[in-house]
Length: 230
Image (cartoon, rainbow, N blue to C red):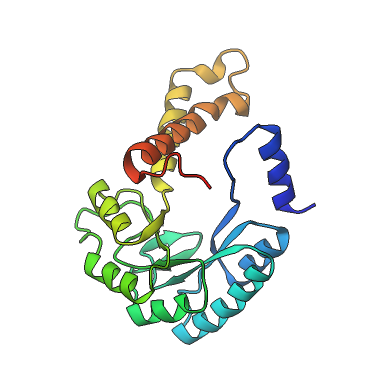
C-alpha cells in the first residue's frame, strides 16, 4: 500500500472535504526519488547546493520521474538563507536566467531565493528583493513561484510577493513557536498531572490546536487562500 493510498483512507474516514497533498519539502536527490516511489502526491527536489549544471541535470531527471507518476514537483534555484532539513545557505539571490532554464524544463513550482531565509529573521535583515522577484516572474512566463521562509516576513511584503507571482508560501517557524508556547502553558498549568493529562494525545492537543488556529488566520486574513481548494 502506498503512502498516498493511506492518506486517501484517512482523508475519506475523517470526512475531509478538500484535496489533501502529501508534500516532501527540501528533498535530496535520493530522498525525492524515494518519496516519488512511496506515492507522495508532491515533492520538492532541492538541488540548489549543487553547481547549476548539476542542479539542472538532476532537476530534469526528477521532473521526468515525477511526471511519469502523475505527481507535481518543485525545484529550487538560488539558496534560501538559514538552515532547514540539513540544507544550509547564505540566501543568495537567484539568477533570473537560471530560473528560466529550470522553469523551461516543465517544473510545476519554482522556489527562488529573493532574500528570504529559514528560521527567525535577524534585526538587520534587508527584506525581500522585489526587483529580483519581478525579473524572475517576467522570464519564467507566469510559473508559480514558491516563497520559502515565510515565517517572520512582514505581512505586507508577503502580500506584495503574492501579487508578483508567488503562489505558495512556506510557513514553519511560526507554527513551531505557537506550538511550543501552547504546550508550555499546558505543562506550566499542571494540566499534564491532572488525570491522564500526560497522555500524548492530550499533552500535544493545545499545540496542535494553536497551529490550526494560526493556519486558519493566515489563510483567511493573510494569504487570501481560504475557500480556493480545487
